[in-house]
Length: 234
Image (tube, rainbow, N blue to C red; front, side, top):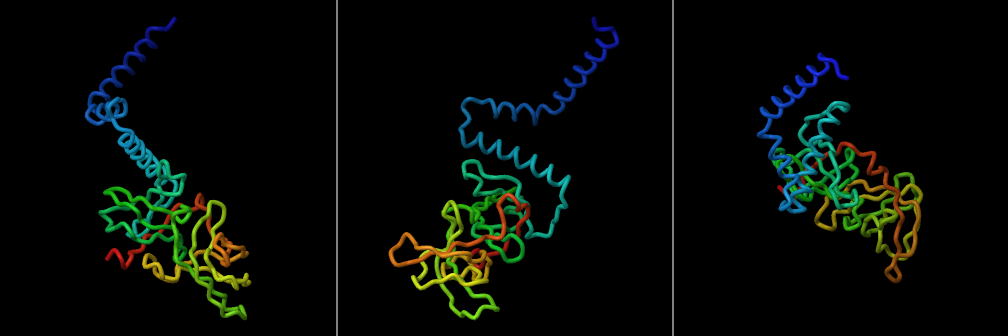
């Protein structure tokens, strides 16, 4: 049997909870009504869920990581539903002069992705881990190499490896050779780092080769990125 003071505490708890809900009803009731509305579209529901995920991720990370408000530095706050983890949300948007087509870097020079869509509170970035993301690239020998060859091709993720495809058949593995954007696609400037060549293989196209590339980072290890203004969005 519950004692009288225990019963009193229960009623007090219910009383104060009722007061809290009453004074916050303008925010709470529409939120629950939206989530349980049978007529709400699937896209709207996903948008609401993503909004909640964004808020929770942002609050959580600001508690445990240093938060830098330097303008072009952005924090990855979530993954776009249905993208297989290949598109991410960052906490910079229209008020920060971010535009679709801006370049996204991990570190100072390593290409990470491209801003695909902007909103007031966030932007969506298509990362280089998306197989539809392609970059005109060149393989360049390191300063210590005796080779002076430069090979041009297309850099992308084939679902298993990063590759530079459609290379001339005389392409060889060059020790220490690295890959960078060439600027020939009119989307990215030249000089963004993409990794280093570790092997060559035959392309799916006759009489052409592809190079297997070691990208320096894993998607799950990247928490902050730098958004660089593209000359195409100026």
